[in-house]
Image (tube, rainbow, N blue to C red; front, side, top):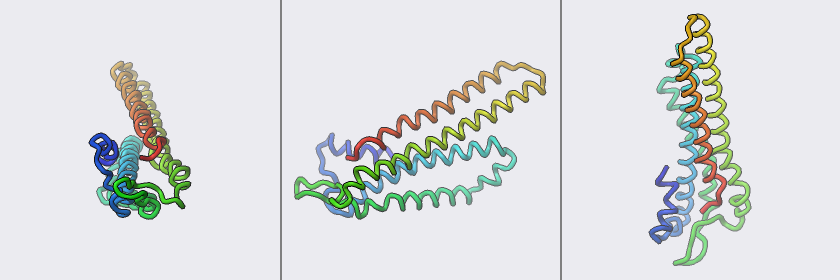
Length: 194
């Protein structure tokens, strides 16, 4: 992901020519790769959070739900769906201008889509929907673990401070991870492309 996201900045820093400016195919491929891998990384975090949630809520059944075959199916389906969402780059992005000042950008007929519609779709696919899912599931995990700690303290008639400290640390970590994900992924989705 670092390579695909920072690739444009490395080109500018080293004053290189953008590979997407050589051919329409490379133009579409470049932006497809950048957006696809950014979105796919976010959804892998969502799937990891779902896995943690299943392990907390159904610990005895988690191995049945989280089989390798099921995980591969989920990852494959999400990869295909994200590929479908990003296929528009193959026909909306073309080489603009003339040599040596050519650049990769939306064609004239797709500029409204590229400048006004796609940023909202990308914002939903990358930071917003994954953030809402991650935050919601992390709150569910915190609530479930809080209930477990409470019943354990009541039923065992003990007051263990290490459990409450561990619960507080877990709560802070889960909420911090959710917030950090959104804070680090949202700027790339809302900033203009290029």
